[in-house]
Length: 139
Image 1: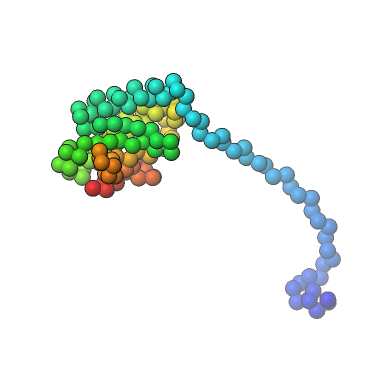
Image 2: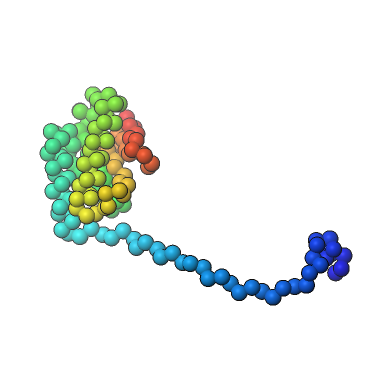
């Protein structure tokens, strides 16, 4: 054993095991709460305002169980818009969606919201990117 000790510089005798240090445990945040019926009623009203204010461009706004928001857009308007117009439109609607969710107490104002835009046949037209305030036009 002496040869191995000298190879690895283990000339010391074994030390007693140290007592473990107290580790600070962080509390887990509770899972997002389910919206109440009152919150959903407020949200439906606010989503209806988005539809009415869009002058027929937005047909429906829906909160999915996943927490994402789906916005149904008329293809006839989407199809003739430039990419820049589409991105501006998505940014404006997304901001209104986020304000509606916050106003109904479903999210905090600084929470992220995934907003996806579809046409009436269910084709994905565009969505907010995961990070930042950018929007990706699919078509």
